[in-house]
Image 1: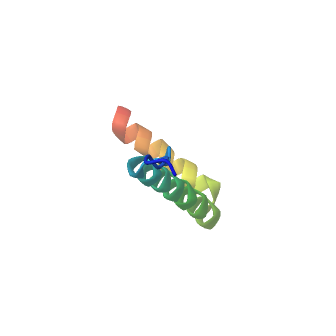
Image 2 (image 1 turned 45 degrees about the vertical axis):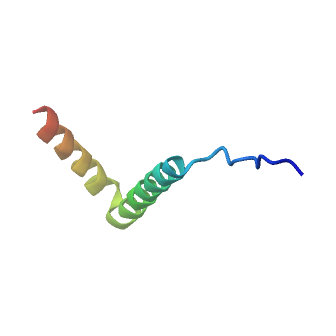
Length: 53
């Protein structure tokens, strides 16, 4: 039996980042489904307007 055990190629920070991105995407889809595209795009437009003047 080898003394060295193969480690997983995925680390905890990578998995945590993937989980956060997945939750953000799921949240986006749920909000879009609930409020519709008009409110969703209006929120994006207002956000860009607030950031970039």
